[in-house]
Length: 87
Image (spheres, rainbow, N blue to C red):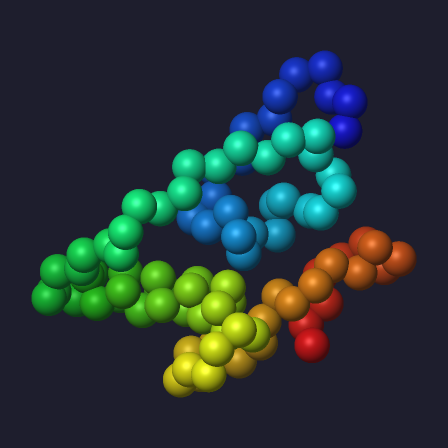
């Protein structure tokens, strides 16, 4: 907060990245995804799809029943310990 120049972070997913800590920026401006991405049938496409589904599981896992894709969730930020904690 109060930085003289804006910082730019490139992330795969601004909702699950550890680079953006709560209450550490005056403004966070992101470009949200528009619609569900399309994946090709090849190996790279299926790897991309699995990565996308794991990221969405991080975001949505606590809100709806779903097939477990990842073992843990970045559920909340501990301001005393100054780190992300899994529940």
